[in-house]
Image (cartoon, rainbow over all chains, first blue to last red; front, side, top):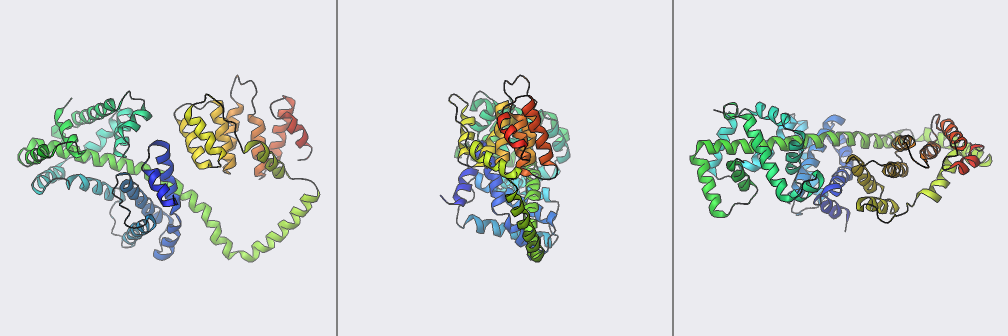
Length: 193
Length: 242
């Protein structure tokens, strides 16, 4: 198995193997940052930000099986990273966190058909995002960790192992309870009107 | 439990049958309250995703700094080649002098590491993950061994044994500060019948041989001899040669 296949298999594994593969992936293509700094005259901080965002996006795509292997992982990484560098150069990136956040939101919204999407989109535009962010921080540590692991693509089985839940079913029920709890905390009026 | 959230979650995790999916989508378009709940669900998940990304970004930022630091000298090396050659010549003279005046602390440590620390014994009945870590170590896959032992330690199971293994892994992967930290921690474990922490800490310092390392190693070895701690025989042989 070559290095790229090993990385992909590792990223699609659970637990320690997955975390280790994330680090290895980051290190594997790190040399591209030297190319980008020279090619686009980026500062180390700009390059670190663009490269980290690139790797985070690639991890998401591999974990969620969206990377189909039509090109090599190297070509895929190179293209995404260079595009991000161009964005930096053009100063077109808005706040870097919100770029990824929008990407994540788009993935859910675009799974809805047009009519439903428009209505939900309007609701989102009216929503009180700040309140939501605050209330997420106020969730209990265990609830928060559970929701974050799920969002990071870990399977219910792996979450059960890492967080000492008795079964996969308990993980699922607990996760939905946590969402429910958050919904109560946010409240209808604070959410949108 | 709120059944609406369960229903929405089933849709977005792909667990609704096709007919139910259509009903879900129709309800989104016709029922404002329901659409509001869907918007809450989407926003929550995207906020959580952003939080996951932020945490990863922080970790990667640290990794970036380490990798960039490790790479920087290479470009400097190119520019400083003439000076490096001169320094190398001086170093060669120094090495020759050292070779003819006896083995350095680093050499002694190298021999010891080669003979005693490259293979850990696999003990029957240990936890699976510890065995896996030891196997990775013995195969020289120190990154994997590190991840496993760190993971065990993070779960609150940092026994003296795990602390020692982590120290070895850091030593072998040349993370000397971390190795010393582990062995110093080990040396403070109470109720350990034979505590090799100070001896291993001295080995790491001898291996690194930077700044006052050799001086500190000498004083640690003296303590090992005085207290008859594990490694005192080697310490007695080495101390006169440092």
